[in-house]
Image 1: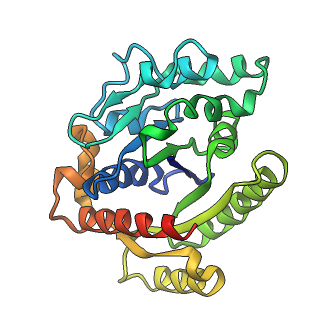
Image 2 (image 1 turned 45 degrees about the vertical axis):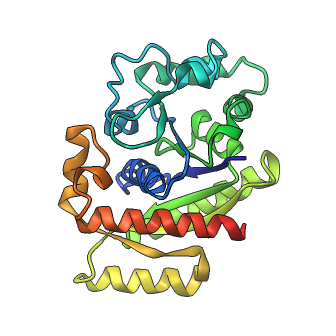
Length: 256
């Protein structure tokens, strides 16, 4: 039975997609069967996995409106070792079409049930907003992984996201919980980042992952080659950190 995790943060530009793609590849390094679901109409996780979003025959859009099932829409990441349910601009129209469909917030959850025995992990890359797409992700998930930068405004956004998760937990998905906070783009030379990191550890305790993802140019370069950073330069500090994070996720799942 797959563990389903959303990679979510309502603040944009915090490394959500980078985390989703590289965690998928990092888990694959450890022999895990992984499905990456791209719920963002920009399709960055799809492109970053080496799949051309402009040429996919079926995407998560067709899955959500019920035209195809996941088995017919997924594709294999050419170099990542995981499967991808891709997204493109069509997904932007799904918001309008979902409004009139029954169980509109549970469409993805129902679709995932068909393939849940085929994977160990399902990772959902959510858009940076609280939309009906994000709601579908949260209603499908066992938990949320929150990537965040150690900056003041990131703390402000974290409060909003935690409140959103509490509301979804109370009203739509009682299984939903925060799995952990992942510190990304971390630069230990910046005093403020060290201070915010310490605040997170003191306030959230063991909800903060031990692994810290450093700011790393190789991770930033990798998407332009359609390759996860973990594969693009396996020896880089960023890739090593995501492989370590994959191992930490496997261990944390055992305690859930």
